[in-house]
Figure (cartoon, rainbow, N blue to C red):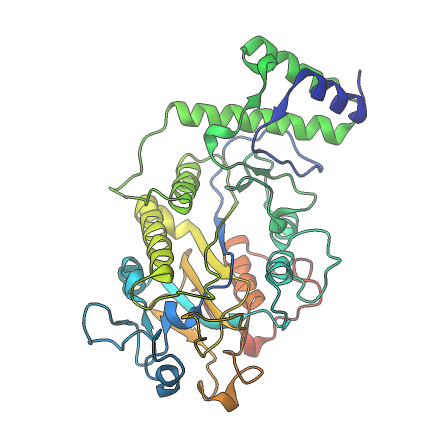
Length: 416
């Protein structure tokens, strides 16, 4: 019999660890039979995406005045012009893979979205996106973990909440157990003592004997999750429906999220991220640094949608970034930290084929946040809250977003 401290000492001496995995300790239930719940996928675009390039306000003369070198040409001006979405907005040409999803009603865009907190710090702003409490640094858990706790029909599947990245993201901190791994192949026991099945069983038995109940239950979920993932990998088929993912970190991660969803392992939430959006210099326009990142993002989401096929109707994917970038380009061919940006909402019964934008009076300097930025007229939480109601059937989000009041006049109507 061992307590938590002596267990950790023993496991360290044996050279054993969970590779690429971090577990949120809590009241885990026993392994549940695979279910098929509706799922929510969140992609965090770290670095501050330039929403005015991703979704171009081509009808705004002030946009072209502010960006003589970086602006994307209006629709109909050649292969490098914006792809028309409506009378005001167009997609960056590198996001061409998303246009059929938009036209087919499976993709919506929320423009001028962001945090009500005005910080220009990447660290603080990303923390607020994930904690769901902008301006409050003391929040201990993440909003997506709180949402799982509030979900009445929530199950105890060991793969209920997954982060496809090397460490547990802030958004999944909390009492509901979650696992994080860079790839399914890295979710395994590491070390010489774990190289045989017998050693792995002995390690599992040592967990079973632990006095600490939370350690015992969480470990049981970890081993069950590991077994399911290894079985899934062993019998894995390629993406469905001819989906072709980019050979990039985001492409690989979304491919594995789709694989987990199609395998019916009880996945309810999945989180991943992608970086490279901090374009202070050499941003480019239809080509260049930003275009490369956008192409990866668009192609990855499009492959994910193709892979899931009809199953996409049960899944909602939302992207969010910490803040946008300045309306005016700077002297080094880039843009600086701003405020409002864009969010993409895919699948899940979304009312697509629309750009949801409380745009205000345009991009003239007098209408900008602090005279320089696109205002954030839609709170990130407005979008997250509507998705939670649609996917999780939450009657109230008060426990998920403390201090936030979802006023009826701010409802976007993103879901049918």
